[in-house]
Length: 230
Ligand SMILES: Cc1cc2nc3c(=O)[nH]c(=O)nc-3n(C[C@H](O)[C@H](O)[C@H](O)COP(=O)(O)OP(=O)(O)OC[C@H]3O[C@@H](n4cnc5c(N)ncnc54)[C@H](O)[C@@H]3O)c2cc1C
Image 1: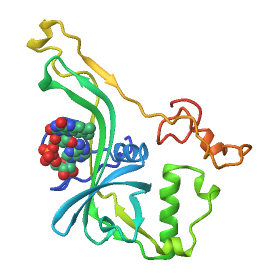
Image 2: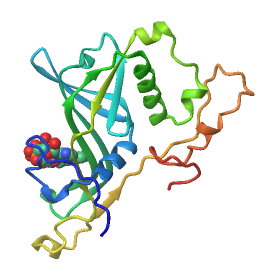
Image 3: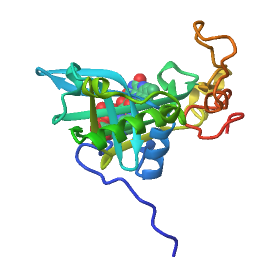
């Protein structure tokens, strides 16, 4: 018997109600979506009002780390949060405006963000955040000093309650009455790729681009290899 794949538990909050056919319960899909990005939208309620802010994250197993200024109201911790990660893969141009859509992969994580107070975990969380976005950079750049650590809040969020939606493929109206009109329909793909590193103009001109940065040119965010889109 094939080993069972880990699935996401369905809760009242994560149960898809609309566009259910786009939902996935595969934990591997959740992890792939999170690993393919490094910017999320963090939703919190601040003084009774919703606030959604874009911010960087890093994944370590079944945990996300978020960070920012100790002054940030969205990083208070100990409160319910919702984190969303979205990748747009293309525009779905249908025959009718109604059937237009987006090909995408998205994840929504619900939970209570925990403020990381243990100094070792705080440093480890910052390492995860840095390495998630820029593999190899943690040991290349100077690490945070005591003052910088004190100015930084790190939050941890469990990936236990999360949902995934994925849309792929052509428009849905290829076999409907609008197909007879002969209009073009299809998908306009969109791909994010790292460009050529641009040196800081203040660098001495002979400063080499480190290999872990140079190797990413032409690759997609989240790919851990170099040299071309995997
Ligand atoms: C780039 C992009 C563009 C979109 N554009 C539109 C649009 O224009 N109009 C539209 O109606 N919908 C759009 N969607 C789909 C949209 O995100 C919702 O899935 C959909 O509208 C259903 O919303 P709802 O409030 O009824 O969700 P519900 O089904 O009530 O949500 C229940 C639970 O399902 C989960 N969930 C819902 N949506 C998502 C998601 N996208 N990814 C992961 N988990 C999810 C959450 O955990 C949520 O708490 C778009 C999605 C993406 C990624």
